[in-house]
Length: 259
Image (cartoon, rainbow, N blue to C red; front, side, top):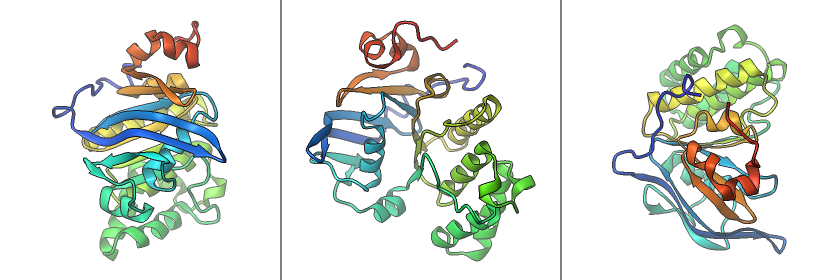
């Protein structure tokens, strides 16, 4: 675990909040999904979001992006209320980007074409677009497959391409929904290192990652949140989470260990 992430941000610049979820409640078809939850994501940290299926992890992502609106409560980014601000303005004005669990790429376009398609939306200057595309291809080690259609890429290559596409707009908040799903051991390791490298390159960028691969996620998280029964069961550093009785009862069980 220490080899992948040699440091953990537990306080950063007097704990500057990047995202604040304040007393959020949300229901769907009369079913309560989230009930009065509150938490804060610090500037520059990687936060892992854990919990059983259907507990509301993807709902939280959709609330942050603006795809959903809470029944009660508020969402703040950079200490400004964004609860009523639409998706596109959260992306453009507040730098919110999401790497979805599935998809996220155009299957019949090559790596280069995928990056070009997004760059034409988020980057005005043509020379800057070309520079950013080449930079992303190099950074995410996509050179050997840059002319290959996305549908023919491996799982790890598609994940790297999807993250590269999300970074073209220089986001300050990245949400990743189950990025380790379906990856082999080597691809998982490479993706972990990629995510940590993103943090070291831009130490004001915040990242929230939801995944059932708890060991892989905790290995790179500064803090983690465990959701259960519509509420937050536990929040803290990975070492604290693993010792938390509520987290064990809700998600990990008594036998779960990192190593």
